[in-house]
Length: 197
Image (cartoon, rainbow, N blue to C red; front, side, top):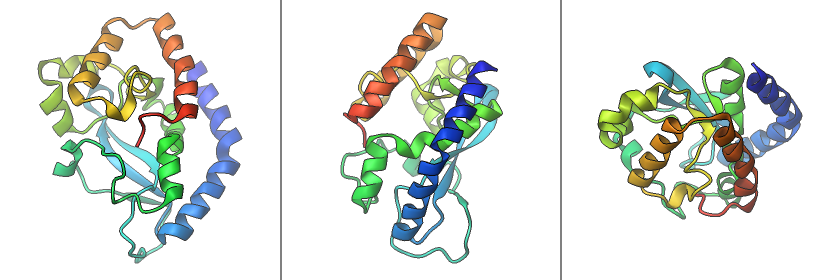
């Protein structure tokens, strides 16, 4: 409950900045400011994970909306992030990605109890089956998080194998001490913006 209250207070404080960022995103992309990715939550429940839009193709949206649900579990989900992704067409969007500003709407999921501040990142079924295999049940036993161990140990430069190892270590060694260590390490990792794209 404390985590949900903290997320609510944080989202309230950040809402003016998020509103401005969303308005800039609409002006640059000519599309709705938020996207929702279909991911697998705790116990296999579907979670439409919110993010600020940082990728667009230059075409304007045919109908106004606040959130666009992206296609379900498409093959591209298995392609790792790359630096200087051509789909990130704006320096503003690249900055949002580098400093994880695009992830801030996920505080809403923490308030709803669908996610935690700290936990393994929510993935698609394809990613879970391909990279977690026999450890999938362990992975799905815990609520997904906005940040986790691999987010403070290398972020986007890590391979899926390295992420899996860090996720499973975090899950198996879970404690309040580890939770707090990751939480406090997340702030400088985000502010530095290293290894994020």
